[in-house]
Amino acid sequence: MDEQKLIELAKAGDRKALGDLVKKYTQTIYNFAYKICRDKEKAENTMSETFFSMVKAIHQFDGNSKLSTWLYRIVVNHCFMLARADKSHLFNDPETDEGLFDDRYFTDWSSLPLKNVENEELRRVLDDAVSQLAPEYRIVFMLRDVEGNSTEETAEITGLTIAAVKSRLHRARAFLRKEITKAFQK
Amino acid sequence: MSEKKVTCGDVMNHICESLGEELATQRCKEIRAHLKECTCCQQYFESVEMTIDFYKNYNFTASDDVCKNLLKKLNLE
Ligand SMILES: [Zn+2]
Image (tube, rainbow over all chains, first blue to last red; front, side):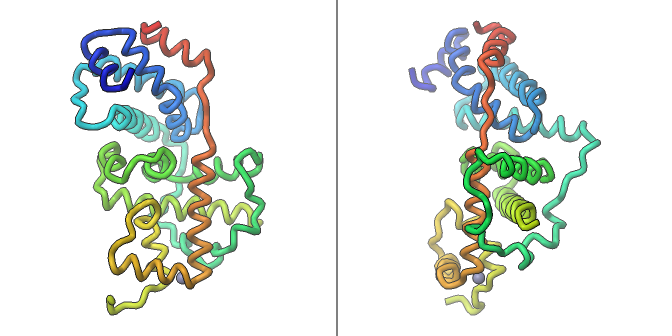
């Protein structure tokens, strides 16, 4: 059954259709929440919260945006809340990072030992780099580049202007790239 | 032609728009031309694309138990 039909049924109170919608988005939302929270338990909680909100508010879903956009927005709000509550973590702000485009990091990546993400060392480097990135940058990078939302959708999900999405995206990419280069230049 | 010559810094600042988006304006054409000629910018561009690919391919899956529990918690079994 197509999503439109499922949404209509779910809005009319069909529990089976609602369950099918939850199943359809479980992995997407879990994966995204994990990438933002970097923690299994937090990702599971965020996912539960997101679907609780969906079940509670599905009758208000107006269909003006995609269901996925709507779900991502709930996840993002939840993650921002968690990030604000967690004062223990110091993040790197790419806005003030002067070395982002430093010549030192203009190396040819074809010489780096970067084959695929099955590589344990690469995974560790990716984790380290993205954990240092301030949440508001990480979220934009994940939404736009990794999840494949458009710039407009990313702006809608985060409540940022399109210009702000582009500038954060640009800096997040440069920051992650720099961190990966640094890790492998050692 | 715009008066100012495209520099490496311009290209890097522009990569945001040029990845996965339309490169149609005059400025974009100049940037593409620069990118074709300049190894430094090519390497930058490629490494940014690779960075994105790494993260795209680094995924996490919820276990069957987690999925089942979710439906149970939501009363949607
Ligand atoms: Zn250049």
